[in-house]
Length: 90
Image (cartoon, rainbow, N blue to C red):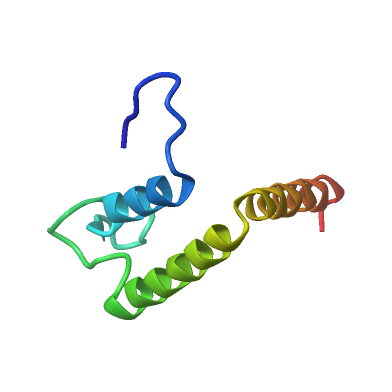
């Protein structure tokens, strides 16, 4: 999850590492507001959630591989649109 300063890591690989890092998260409180790594507690993501996230990540990888610059530009546009919606309160 760490890279040398000045290294430009692969965006989708770093995203996958972040997902993997969180797959063992479990609820630590009855109200679901407190989570931690590993047991005890019910897992935050069930197997269906994990499969769904894997398929979505693979789709993003295909899209990125087809047009890396276009993919990054689309992500930035989507992020900016979300920021604008939040500012407008919608």
